[in-house]
Length: 474
Image 1 (cartoon, rainbow, N blue to C red):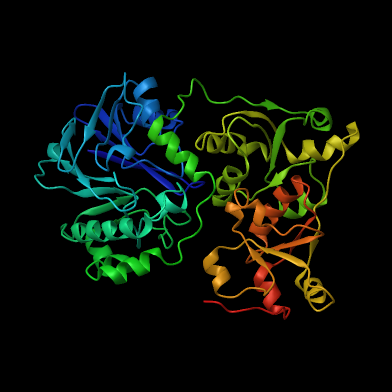
Image 2 (tube, rainbow, N blue to C red; image 1 turned 90 degrees about the vertical axis):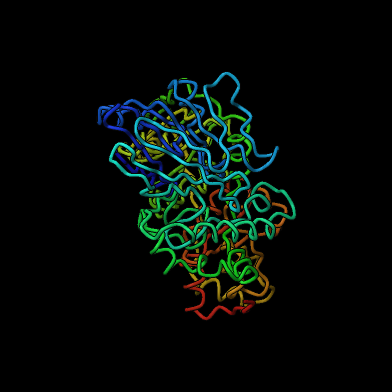
């Protein structure tokens, strides 16, 4: 048996290629939408991918299972659990099998057993993996999807907090507790292969180690340790969950109803300095240079985001499908960022340009905007002056509850667009987070929308050090 983890740092997301080396057949679990990477990896190992499977209907990226079924001639395995509202609606015309708890199937000499593990989502399946070709008669591991992570469990609130289905948090948490008790009946030796690692918004305390064992999680996973005390479990698992990015609701709907099939990856043009000076109409510019360089000069209407886990959380929350996108980034990042955008359905990447090209556009008559920023001492002076300034705190609610400015308004930066009506109107708006990064991203979007927004350098940490007053609410 061949087993490979394929990890996406921008989404903290794990897919798994599992292949039978005797028959040359392989399956991919929880693939992303750009399936060429998996096909190339399989081919390099002498395998062909004959199947693709989902653990559940994802909220944070677009699944590649439909792409495999339509373009890769692979058999799709999806869940039939969870009720009528959470069935895959795109299966007509595709070779597929709908699985229920206890169902088994084989790819080559490897057996997979579906285990219904609801709570994170109603239809969620885990998959026990048994290497029949190696002579095993019991599983060696379990692909847990968004059910069990290293050090945490999948959050049960997303149907309510992301998909907008009221009254689902507590019932889902109780269902998750029952699934956790079932997980604890597995043998300690089973390896645990989760779908996410540290940084994912699908949990609140995910570890950075890529895999674990049932025995290790039994001993050290705090959420699992509470499974027998259901009320304590519910209170713990619902407390302090981060606000989901605004694009999660769209991912849920598309993954359930049918992810658009890609005919080809986007092939953006390489923009020249003259292009940047005169071809911006209708293009959403995303700039990933250092914040200091963005502040000094950026294309009008550009939004700023940091490379890494912040990139998709921010762009996905501020940019809508169908909008044309231009990227300002180092040339070595063009392919990575284009693929990342495709993985959340932002397919229309019109052009890419380097920071050097942007610097040169002034020579062609291009005008660059700046982004204002003040330090914490300057904000303290404003707070101690006459009327208090307008302040927007874009930290998560759990951070806000640990202390905040008395007159500030709290809207997490990834929920900014659906909650724009809550942003204080009027004159200059001072925006802060914990350290100055999330607020900078929010400032760029607010300024694009005509708000006179100013970033507070260093965020809450610098503000407390400077003596800005706070209110404890935790």
